[in-house]
Image (cartoon, rainbow over all chains, first blue to last red; front, side):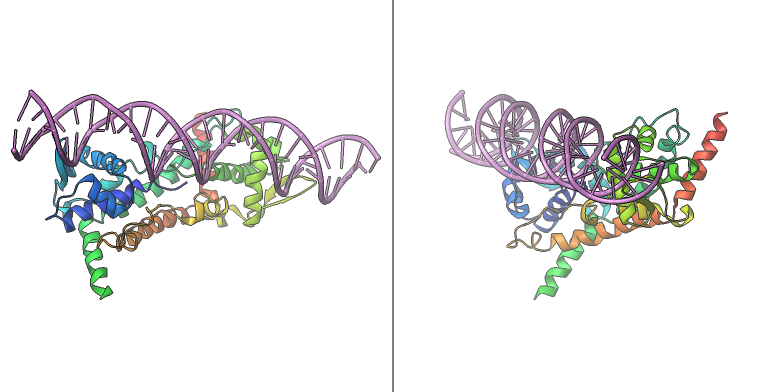
Length: 145
Length: 145
DNA sequence: CAAAATGTAACTACAATGATTACATGTAAC
DNA sequence: GTTACATGTAATCATTGTAGTTACATTTTG
């Protein structure tokens, strides 16, 4: 399967909080932009909050950024929204036959390559920030005209 | 979610075909090593066959390697077994609001980063071969003693 | 033909996703 | 304090992909 769209929604939310920072960004307003249900937004916003990326409080309308968007990497968001279960991007078949040479060693052996690949992906995400995304959005918008 | 364990099973099969190349590797035998059902093995073997990685025929017992394992990268296997649907590792929420500045640009904007991250992962897999895995397995086995 | 193996399809159980509804909790304004 | 409104959260549901299982058609060899 693929990485949860919570990731792209999380990025969407953060970009929106920056670009519409003068507006009141309630879960309902954000849901309109993302095109989903407000409860979905509240759940993801809650995850972003737990990661210290946004500020949001029960009873108080609207979410706001808790950090400068230049300091929020895509990896931060990726981790915040649990884009991948348990941080295990690859799943390995379990209980291979321990009585077989290949069976008893395969798990540790593939783990080496899987970890390296996962690290490569995460490193790429770490080099990109919400600032980059916001700039790109504004750029694309300018080109539309 | 995470990347299908078909990937690790595919690697397991190929490694086994090399290490046990003097034996007859039927779907039943392979299933014993992987610890799963023969039909599962036949399905994955079929995918590896379609990708030109193994040789296997109806009515004839056993699968064999169709290429030198130094020439089979993990990316080849990854693609062969369809480890990720449609080659889209990341999923993006669809139909964001086109009447919103962020909504109408977010998909293309995240696509840039997502593609880069996916490429980074695939590049890493491309640099590793079944040979590496086999060597590692044999190495680990030696260290057990 | 008979035996044995592969290729496939159908079915099942399971798990995660994302949407939806409902409601408890918390805040502010009156 | 009560009311209005927003967030937090749990329960439910439909959908989807996975992986296992069974069954059977197809193909080859003896």
